[in-house]
Length: 414
Image (cartoon, rainbow, N blue to C red; front, top):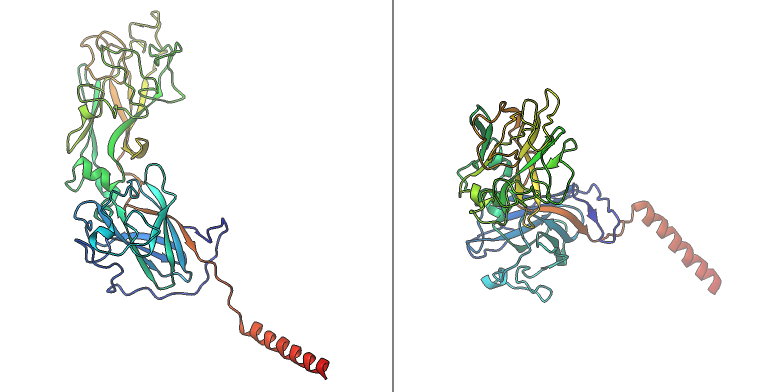
């Protein structure tokens, strides 16, 4: 639900007066570039605001969206708060004015058209306010431009649901786990990310169970890692050198966003234009039946196992993480080694004949509740305050009062 406000921190209760919706055939936006009308349409009613796609592509033929506003509420609207996973306020100089539409003195971007300008844009250009010089009256419309091809967006859920698969492999049996994400609808990774408001995808893995004694440390710590409580795999400072691989500073992601494909724990090494892959083969020689390597010959109690949760996540424009909740839970009781050591976040197969046990997938979630369908979210609607209308009773009492004033005035003058 979008909150309507006066702009001074006070809620505004909208009345029950209904405004007729604008006919579907009526154009809200003027023709601009490749568009004959709006690419995204924001509709405001007395109960909130929604955004929808019209099927028009970017007006510049590439990455800019013409946005229309229809005010079907009973209040005049002077501002909208908007947010997105994309940098919709990252204006790059090819606004509406470059396509022949008039601008205004309040807008230096060229995207505001004749009646809109932008304020309170955040550092990532993913959120801000659209202000209307002349408030949009009930039944009225307005338009402006935004960055990115929002009108091409389809539901993120339709892109990612049931698109993650996993398999087990390795010798002894099932000592490694592979997964892949291939977007639906024939989209490539870049297109799928844009439709979800992301710059890319990655994985997030959490170690939910790691018994003591543990052979694992985080860089800079002398306290062995155990779980619960859960911790990210890799932890914020990474693990010490594992089989000569670079320290993985991917936190909070599984694969490092910044390192090149030559790093086997980089995102680039596990991504093609169409598929994101995942691989892990943990080995803990301190599990029951193992050698106790790095644990002074000690091993965990019988029945102990490692446990993990692995999810597909989105990489937001500021390189933060959004968990889609799609993925799988799994356990691993392999008590051998990989490259001669115990290892987590592992890129190599385990050492043959170094131990027993393996991986079991205990659960999988195939769908997300995350929604990103129109490319933008309306975070606030600011209405112009209105004086309450005078009722017939009030007008009647006012007439009596004025009549009395007139009689008293005449008596005094006489």
